[in-house]
Image (cartoon, rainbow, N blue to C red; front, side):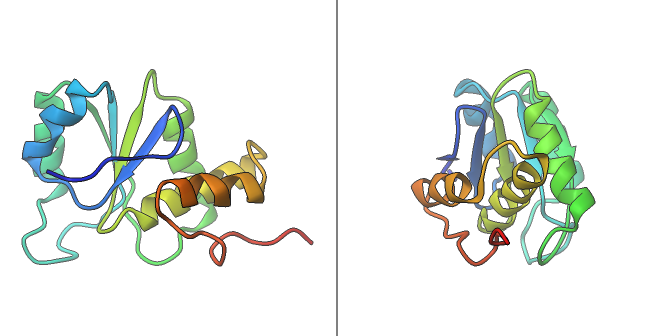
Length: 138
């Protein structure tokens, strides 16, 4: 079972999940799953099609927003919107969780939803260091 790391009331992130983790995610109240991992990025990784089928079987909405490296503005905005527009708590995952929380935080920063210091603190509380990933104010 993977570790779900709570960032806010609406968002938790996780390292790579397996289809078997999704019933547990639904039982914990998550309603949407965001996958930020491209297919075939690593050996043994379940495909997005497998994860979508397992998510839907568990009653979760599935959103696939894959990227590698730093997200571009459109991807960051899409991840932030997928969380903000969800009818309930969201679980986002990638290989380690770092990509997912970075995309969300960049989207939140771009939307003016929170400032950099708040986002760095939220990430730190979930075990992620975004101090180098988020742009500093001018």
